[in-house]
Picture 1 (cartoon, rainbow, N blue to C red):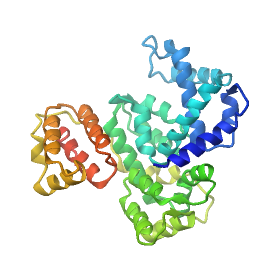
Picture 2: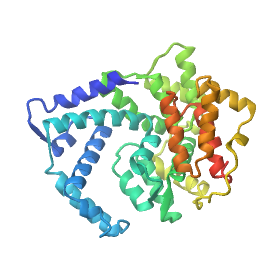
Picture 3: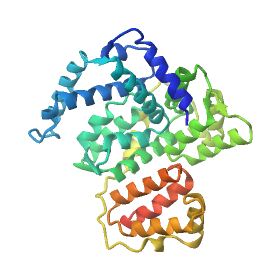
Picture 4: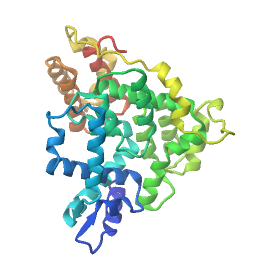
Length: 366
């Protein structure tokens, strides 16, 4: 999806270095390109440096959670990055990955942050999370609100499942407590990226479907779908989105602010802090048979929508999941099902299926 925009973005980035054998990171960061692209080049550069020069700084020789050490390492990395050079081949490779990363992050920030920060691990320290999330210059309300939440509710370790719930809760509260103007500012990166990629002020409606579903805002996603299917609008302008937002959100939530503009997180941070409680990760109990979690209606729906009407594949998948005794492996297996069957992991059926399996491992969560 959006392959044309990805390729256009890549070619535009490469055109800036035309005729050069090498290009520095400093030059790339000075280019007139979307922030999400610059973020990827920054992350790419740090990865190169850590692999080639800084392995010792990530070794067990040092306390990786020490705040002073993390700051010193970041300063050192930033100093080295200023002189880092990309060869023509490296720049072309990084440009392709940057274009694909940017479209994913712009449209699915919660999903992308989870993948980038946790990779294949199940637990990260709060210090590691804040360090990683600081690399992103779009949707900065995630980082600022997380810093406030972790400061108020200190935790050493955060599981990937809790991190995903935290992102979802932040999005829910942000979109409940900011003005219409601020919501439009939040979605600016989408318009900026597609303007850069396709030189158009409109954005495919499908992009907003993905964006709002990533945030769990299904009411907005349904309105976008309605606009696309019934009103014949495959692409939407900012004015179109403004009209849709006014239809969906309550009147008191769209009042423009008369006072000076303020940052989104300063408005909603107190509300979110009172509604999000840090809880210890539930411990696994004796795991029940997963078949008990599916009634006949749900079974039929999943067989039809997720397993392409193949009941045998459904029952084989349930049998394999019954043999998995931890959520990390179960989650990976579910991902493989979605990939194999070409299922959108944020579709209603996929989310419901995942939630039902999740409850087998964490029976106290609803």
